[in-house]
Each structure stands twice: as C-alpha cells, then as structure tokens.
Amino acid sequence: MPMTDLPRVTLYHSPNTRSTGARILLEELGAPYDLHALNMMAGEQRSPAFLAVNPMGKVPTVTLGDAMVSEQVAVYLFLADLYPGAGLAPSVTDPLRGPYLRWMALYGSSFEPAVMDRAMKREPPPARMSAYGSFEDLYAMIEAQVAKGPWLLGDRFTAADVLWGTALGWVSAFDLVPKSEAIGAYAARVAARPAAVRVREADAALAAEHKAAAGA
Image (cartoon, rainbow, N blue to C red; front, side, top):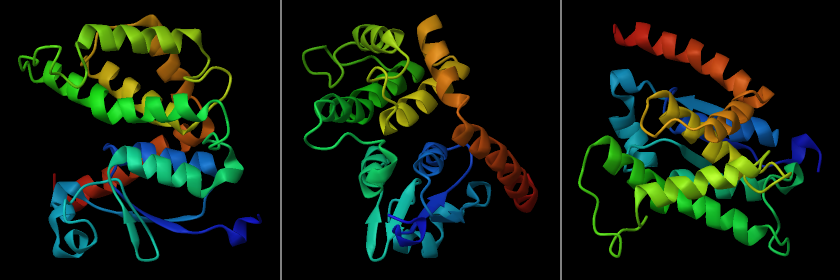
C-alpha cells in the first residue's frame, strides 16, 4: 500500500512519558501521523479539550476518525495491526502471534504492577493472589527471555520490543529494578535503533519548549 493510502492517526503525546514509546513505534512503522503535544508541566493533560478526547487525561492516546484508543498496550496492539506492512505484529496465523500477545499482555498486567509495588516499597500481596506472582520470579523470567536475543521473540523485531525495550531502559536508568547485563544490553539495542534516536532527540527539544512555556 502506498504511504499516501495509509490511515493517518493522531498521537496525543508528552515527552518523557509512556507516550514516548508510542511515538517510537509510529516511527518504526513508518506510519503517517499527526502529533498533538500536551505540556504536562502546564497541566494541559487536564484541560477540558483533552478530557473530551480521553476522560482519563492520559497519554499515549491515539485517535483515528471517531475512534479513540488509550491504555499503553492497547495503543501498541492497535497501531502494529493497523500497519501490517511494517511487519511489527505477527499475523493471527503466525506461530509467533501467541507469544507476542502473551508478552504484550504481561507488560501491563504484571510488569508495571510489580515494578510499582517495588518502587513504592509496598508490601506485595501473597503470591497466590498476586497478578505477577513474585517480583523476583517475574524479573528472572524476563531476564532469561531477553538473554536469548537479539529480540524478545528471537530474531524478529516486533512492537513488543518497542514496549519492553523502552520500559526496561527507563526502569533500569532510575534503579527501579536490579542491574542486569542481559536486560541492559537488550534495552540498549532498542534505544540504538534509528527510530528511537530520532524520537529521543525530538522529545528533548519538545521538553525544553514545554519547560520554558511553563516557566519551570
């Protein structure tokens, strides 16, 4: 499909937030998109205009026509399936589709809650009641998976790598998880990709603009 025929989405985005990964994914997909930047330093995510789009006031948020998609994992799944020509989402008949969906779902359902409990020094629930079991077991499983390399599903780079690579880089940088050579190397591979470099540079400039505008 020619680039001009691809559906064009709008990404509601703020630098240095979870929406950075969604912007990287759009770049990886080669997708046409409009960027609607929200200055969170100025509280624009709580403006009536944005709350009319997403009542939760959260990014990333994507719109396509009258459809609104929020929640990080849903945004990734939606975008990767919307642009199948990029090959970042295994098809429903691909043997990798099941593992791909598993890792996508695991991120939101288990990894983020586990990291937040640990970061906030909250007592985790008993393993039999916890969505993630134990942090130690979950982290060991992730570490073993990325150590196989080069990507989460082996030789194939997918949208799951954008999700996990950016997140693991972020939590490692802020010492929210134990240091791991395998996880550090994996996050570095994702961060070195041209799409990630472009967004990192663009977001740095955007963050500076927002800081100045907010008088911070």
